[in-house]
Amino acid sequence: MAYEVTKGARYKHYKGNYYTIVSMATHTETMDGLVIYKDKNNNIWARPVEMFFGYTDDGVKRFVLIDEEEEANEDID
Image 1 (cartoon, one colour):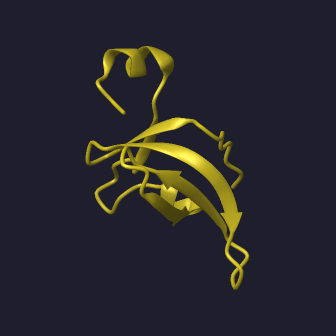
Image 2: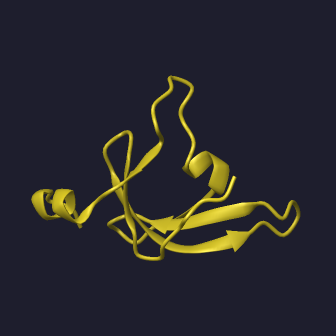
């Protein structure tokens, strides 16, 4: 499945934290796509694309794209 990933897009994790997309990458051994993202403290994280856009074992969407209206109403860094 293809996913649209935009550098600088903001996502909310199901546990409540907010993250910004930094880039996409390719795993050197498996050639799988990775989403590279950062938190408000500029810690860098990587997660396989399928997992980033997937669901938890409980059926909750792991990351949800934040639209501009919601972002304007949230106190996020």
